[in-house]
Length: 329
Image (cartoon, rainbow, N blue to C red; front, side):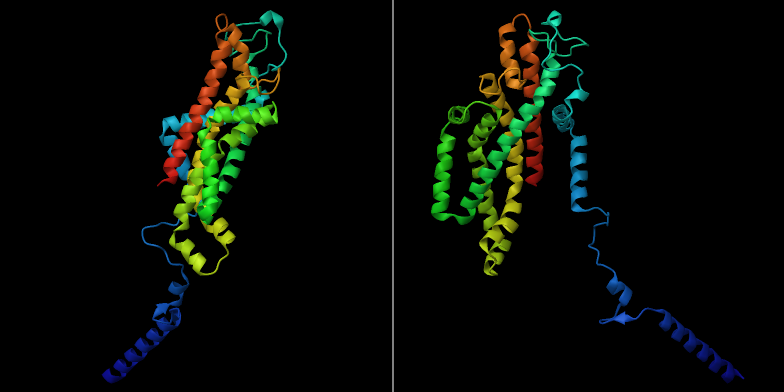
């Protein structure tokens, strides 16, 4: 009887073990479960957030802006100026070129935030509508300097040899001439106008972009992955565009933010001297130039447009500094 019970118990145990083995997933080679082998490997110490690198960059940028009051204020100033250029009618109901003679030279008030000029035109409206012209010229100037300077610097740092010597000696000549004087010389050749001012300012900044891009391309060009690509027989233009350019672009983009502020100041200076668009265009520099004859009686005609120019320049410099700090880490 006892032997019969023992045999039945052994039979039940064998049946249970067989059922567990059938329910358990098969093992892959090396004794690893198939389910475990199919599951993607997770790196220790990192959690799956479900965010791509673009979203993670935006989250870090947003946290950096919120945590720094100065940077937040700079972004707010620049964003407001861009909105002025995009939708000026949403910020002021007054026309920029039509004035009321009875309202001439009124001081700042709730009705006219920046006061009025000698023809009774609302100064705040002229500043808001003039932001489109001034910022568009600035964008063209930075684009000219960024594209031309980056191309020359990238070619000089990657090819080296006599190409590097020829390009950099030309950049030394451009750096030896003061930027404002070089811009004036180019405007004399090209002629007056906002577009010609933008091109002249952009050409004057080519040397700065070229030097930064050359130094970065020299640094990236000696990296291990670039040497490996060369040894693998990858074509030089593929290495240049796929490996060198993306890894050398960070400091150049930070410089472009800094040059944006410098271009605003240069374009305003040239407009102040009378090389910009003719009246009644409301460029920032021409607004300051038009109010200098009334500086004693109407201080706001010069001061308030000048404050706007200074705020934009300081804001772009602050953003450039923050971007350069991020890219250098």
